[in-house]
Length: 253
Image (cartoon, rainbow, N blue to C red):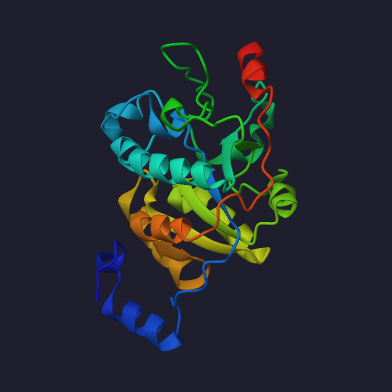
């Protein structure tokens, strides 16, 4: 049996219990997926691959070099989905300039008041990393809480597209990725989490949350298997946005 990333964190009792209880079987993929990229922005990735203890001096939520290890995986998934006409949906955070709407995010970090910006152009940390920047036909969902569904139009977009399943990537595995997967599961969307397309700032949280999602809520699969599955899907199943005028609008903003 192939060793999984979480195996070293589990006791023999844990493994026996999960097997006896029947958890962790592979569910069907679904037939009409959307690729969802959770919060791959500069606040979580930094502006370049940087060791995490150095990176968090400026970007307190950074996942360090692990974020950039996932970037080629995301680029392959995004490229294939765009070529096939499969929806590509990004999430990132949004805040008022005075940070009043941070709300409960203030409760668990003594550094919450920090608001660094990019050295090159002054964008804030919520800007999606240029290496995987949204295209004109992609969708961007702005959120204020961990789940991509909380207080956002994500569910209505998926309904409009006729999606029955999600391919979930991004960060953090233990936070916004997990919260989005659990909400999707609760809404009866089939979920696949891309194991090497997700990352977290702590290795144990990353591995154990992948394990728990795979046990109960989603299939956790390597990107090679996900790409193989996407390649089996027909071209142009979805009525995507035309993208007309989006480049001019972005330039104006």
